[in-house]
Length: 422
Image 1: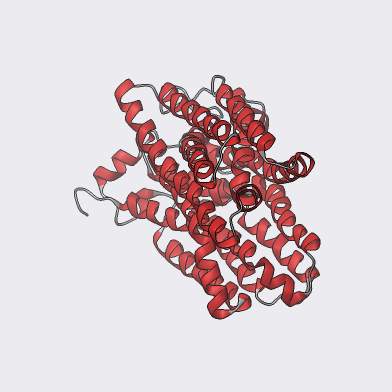
Image 2 (image 1 turned 60 degrees about the vertical axis):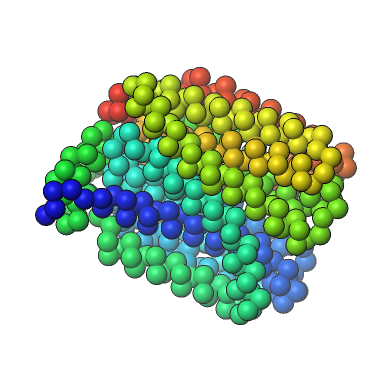
């Protein structure tokens, strides 16, 4: 065995790729929607339920799937999650009508539930406490990057192969990821031959232990814990603002700034790319501040609050944007600044969850699913009644300010061995 190794970085590369795939397979449905509606004779109103049913299934199964990640281990659980959603991505190419499409989409959402809590839990097993912010930042960089590049990739596949074959190809990519993950990853770094003694000692510093056999989940301590309640509410705020970028941004650019579909699609990718950069920077910055100050609590709290307040500023500035270019620059600020908080939230959540960090992550991510069901509908209603998205921006900014304030009750602790459920 080598004296030094970097096996944990390959684990992070796999998690990065898995995060990209989560959004590639999700966004492909939005890109394929016009072709599917025309091919199967589905109305736009009926097709709206195809998007809704995914979020409904995701919300229902998020916590149970995250709990299984704690019980089964991340290797087995992610094989089930990514394999399951890849299967139903491929089966999307075989649907024959609205009923079968809704069924496939529901099971797709159920299968993908628990992905991010389980990946974040894997990071907690493989990275020391003072590297977890950065590692979670890279995971969310992958997610945001996947959202940004997915329309281009999906449009190319659909144009070249047709929508049915495109979904088969996307499913096959997911199966390839599963094969590599199952062969290489181990829940316990000590059992991996590529991990040296020195790297293992580094990883073990502040590592969260797995649940003991037969140990019950301390549900009350997870759900009623002040820090977890704060994380749940701040993540609801996070999801509320983010949903605008993946639902109504192209419509806003076309309706209020006169762009065509192609122009709006390209510009709509820019805030997500900014979010990818913000996610990476937030993790690096929080780890750097923790080393310089010796305080995990205030390094994470400071980065998260700055991210939310910067996001609110971006939305406020977008209210009076007089051109598409000005508007997109403001929204780049909103998305990029806000996503500084993502890696901090996930690192804090998994640390606070202790032995049940994945379950805690599922609880927090449930809040995002709930805001994902509420935000698009409320934004559509406001825009319809008022004829513009200005009030939507004001509301998103207000929600972000509340999200920043909530970090004052979130306590990560200054000791990396502190866990809320231990």
